[in-house]
Length: 113
Length: 113
Image (cartoon, rainbow over all chains, first blue to last red; front, side, top):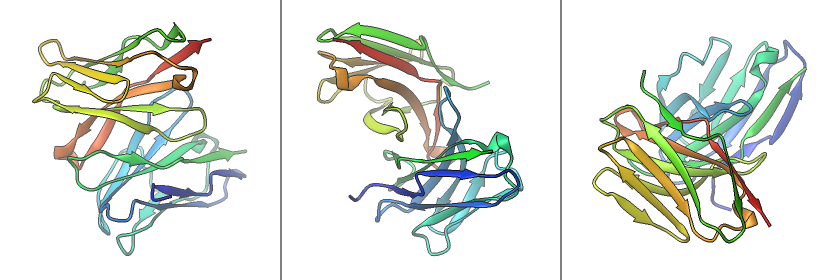
């Protein structure tokens, strides 16, 4: 499978714990995006990378959130001190350029209890 | 503010009928749109895209129409099948902002056998 891969698919954590998600984009894609989706809503943009450079962060990305793409390949999204409001589907996507189709992974479903 | 929205939250059709899902946008400068299908618990799946230099684009059983005058686009699915049941999103690709996507809320399509 050469699509966007995300791990884990599901994560249940206690409030206050830290969690980290991983995304492996399509191999030749230099653009990588993170989105968050809550029930009944469309995905909301969080941040994106061009190669290893993080070029934009949404206001939704509080200081408890950090994303990295150290070698310009896979990316991680870490949430520190999780809150119940962080419960959502976290989607990773990638594209070859800003003017081409964006492909999504299957997402990581986070539940904070 | 700028947004991308959908006309109806739900749509129910009989198997074999054609489905039409509508989407309105507010930014007259928007010129690249992508339709996604999202099944329960999965990430958005690319269906078809269209740029503003086109009024119509066809794929396998799907057609997207773009009316720039009234800032409206639609997704037509021919001979709708039970496997088409999902939530459908139109998204504006803001390639001048790194290719981030602005999604509407989605239309849930239910296909009755």
